[in-house]
Length: 290
Ligand code: HEC
Image (cartoon, rainbow, N blue to C red; front, side, top):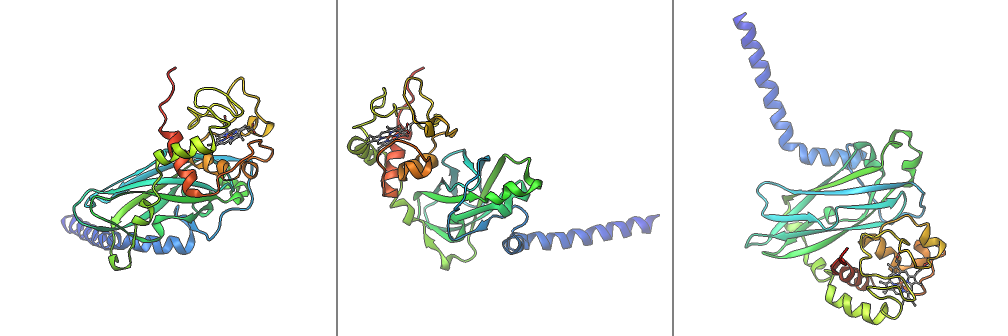
């Protein structure tokens, strides 16, 4: 009885030792494995956006964390985004280096439920690189992505209407290959510039507190498209069933008719930087009382 217990303990200790070794390598191994197979909730990297869209809508939630010894603050700018399968979307994440020295970070990422990982396609992501953030610096980093419309054909994912995209920033093991996150801070959205652009490009048709030629825009961020009583929307906007978020506003302003065929806003904003600034301005407006 006594020896048996000792044997069991010895076996247990051996298993524990092996597991410890495996876990210390597992972040790297797991990523290598997942990048090769696309399983385990790891997302796919693609060169270009989607070309087809479907009617099915999913909500993508964003989740962030930093490794315990990493003095960065890292948060999603928006909590979630609703999108059609196949629709190109964009989300922003904010990172700040709280220390007094430059740090190179590396983000690992994961999608839940796991089975959706193969359908989650990222076009642009800070997580593709080793990223340097200077002491005290703060940036907003965009991720562009879409959910592969082929997910609609997979009976296994028929129950999925919510997806969570999680990132964790670790200190980089390859700091010498880092590129500088300052490339985004140069383009961080600027609400004041957005206010000037709004006055010049939007105010002719839109007011903040009443309908004009175009609908009232004071509280447009977070509002359902085509939803103001008393404004004669086009059929396209009335039946759009989407919420105006930074991502959907970006697509709308880039090309309203491509985004919602039949829409009747006769202008668009070509420059991504201008769109970001205008959207930052709209998002910064105080919610009207009531
Ligand atoms: C020449 C007039 C005109 C200009 C300039 C214009 N818009 Fe519009 N906008 C419209 C019209 C008309 C609609 C309604 C379109 C429809 O019903 O299809 C609209 C709709 C919108 C909506 C949808 C609102 C809702 O309630 O669903 C948003 C958002 C919007 N515009 C933002 C902007 C922004 C931002 C600018 C400046 C960059 C701008 N628009 C410039 C005419 C204009």
